Image 1 (cartoon, rainbow, N blue to C red):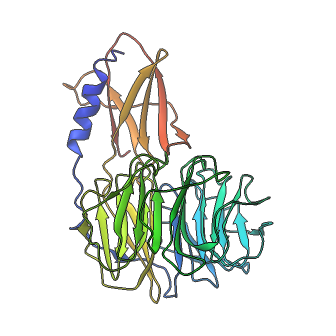
Image 2 (image 1 turned 30 degrees about the vertical axis):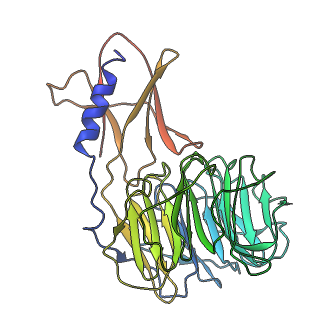
Image 3 (image 1 turned 120 degrees about the horizontal axis):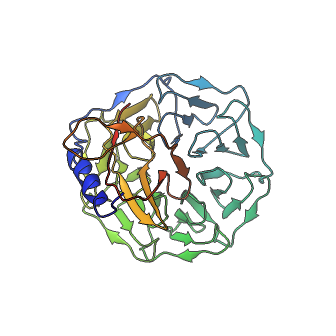
Length: 384
């Protein structure tokens, strides 16, 4: 394999699929029942979903086409999902976890609190949850034990985690004196926290990329702020600054973002630099979720159903050489793709690479490792 030829092959594939027009596509109501939905979360591929109307937890294994109510009395104001959708967490008065996609639930040792938000690592082992009037609690063992963090008492409205669960960002809507809240970040799974350099505001949502570097924060009359260095510095985007930005979700690479503003939904394909108003009904949106590649979005309505926006995935194939190997990687897609190869571009005989992709839980990338050789090969991702 000639490593100097590989970038040209990858660039050629990316060139074929570099544009995705969100504004021309329409959000469609899926098979979820009409409920007072309060939260929704998604697996990395966007197929497994969990949602709650506070009184009952519902799950779907086909991107919302069909839903199943849970038989265990789990009350949830917030939910979280691992990358594979098997490890789930639901927080209400207590915090419950499931290891089989919501079929069975176990009450954790968390204290009884007015839980408002919860996030988990890609493998589901690390959890972080925020309360209405207390601080942030974290768990490093799937919820078996919990630690109260040294954050001020506040209305902790939103929390997000990196894929490895080490980097966290938490946002308070108000402090304990009903004054505008603040944002804190942690780089050690919640052991210590640092206040972010953003103005105090009534923050309503935060998101994080898989590596914890690209963050987004939404608030009341605050517009949308983004950070590209894990919360060290923040930039106010061009999004509308007035009104209430409510809920948000991010792709694993932090490039594709979705946010609700009142009864409207906006998306960004460039990490928040520009925003597009979506073709969605004007409704009381209460929560949004995104697949890892950002092409399968979910939005829940407080007095209504759950809507899906499927976008044709255009995966980007990455390649890196080192230690005698070539590592080909791509974000976990919402559609099955096969890695194919051929020796040159003059023929049409693409052949599937037989190496099984391995999921890197630190960045939600599928990875295939190939030994370097003297021949040249071109690679692409294609539907089987």
